[in-house]
Length: 551
Ligand code: BG6
Image (cartoon, rainbow, N blue to C red; front, side):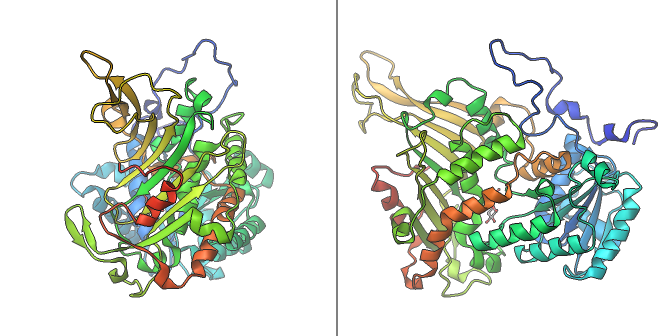
């Protein structure tokens, strides 16, 4: 804290204002104003300092994602001073050992030589460690004592519980937080905390996967609702926090030219792809239980789908945006189990070559059953029964060990009704316009259009209008986990999944999961690592006269 300054003004690193520039008074003539609308993605409210309690602090997620993100927040100057990390875990550690562990995570991520040591000092301040089993009431009593102690200091009584544990532990941690009185039900922001007679807000951040089907997601929602108010619950989908995904809403609703064509009249079909070159790394046991449909499609790709397909919200606040997302999820046509094979494809990779290196088959990965029939690739076709999208297929696909790491949303527009010009050079017919939003890597977007080939005559050639973050903007984008953390500290729920949305996503995929679970394992198709997935996936969309992009 600066001497005599308001602690809320204090930030670790450089100033907040840098993030959005100084020009607050930009007005565009003729645009109906919705008044003092907060930014859709936070940044207008200040993040509050808090005790950041990380359950599973010694685990992979804390190591690979949370600590680098906290460091980055410090670099961006938005980590509120006073924020104190409290680790809760089963291992025996003391505060100093925790500090060394957290420092090690930052060093591992950025290299000990390149990081700013004094910034780390300030971020890590004096972390506290509480050893305990996740179901041990005494552990929560010790945690409570540490938090009471911190409440009196720079955290201003705010508490954020981050559940970075295996999903099997979510229920029991929530239950214990309730039983120990740490949940402070209803204290979701400063005002409600005052009303509840507690010094600050309490929020819980829950990682994915949220349940493993509709039934378990419902049960988890009920357990959570017993203990917390929904406004205290931040269900993470880190895909929603990716810069380009956020930009999708800006692209749609801050530009006049896209919305009029964003419908069944002009759009032919939509592809949403999340292709990875990585295999399952060291996560065999988790992945064996999950598979591609649960791991990627149900949380991430269905969320992306809902942002592409939703109606314009009446305001850019968490409820309005999430209401629209829920509505479009509800409009997704039910896939009856007996039709699952026509709407969904699964497959598993066998050995192949990725980025020039030979890689093993999924069944030979560490801690994977040699006869596993878990899918590492999944593709799903969704139809939406509403006025905007009737008849427009949305194809979602994801896979491990594919040819390239790429996540993108491709909106394929219809061809013009009549072709007046000669075939494009090289033949191949007229290319329809495609708007591609590149989520990662090389974040940006491009619009493919037909253009005249220079010279005599009117031969055509497809060209791309391209915008790339890397070359156009000099800004250092926030990583997804930075955004998640800072939004939760600000109390901005827009990018977090509401309980009803999580259930609706399971409603969509449940019959597919049931159908796959009922099939004998010899029926799982295979694909070669380093390729673009199984032929059955091509057939899934070829039936509609379409082909997947090979980005
Ligand atoms: C996680 C999945 O949610 O997302 C992983 O569990 C996957 O299997 C990861 O690899 C991909 O995230 P990103 O941000 O690297 O695209």
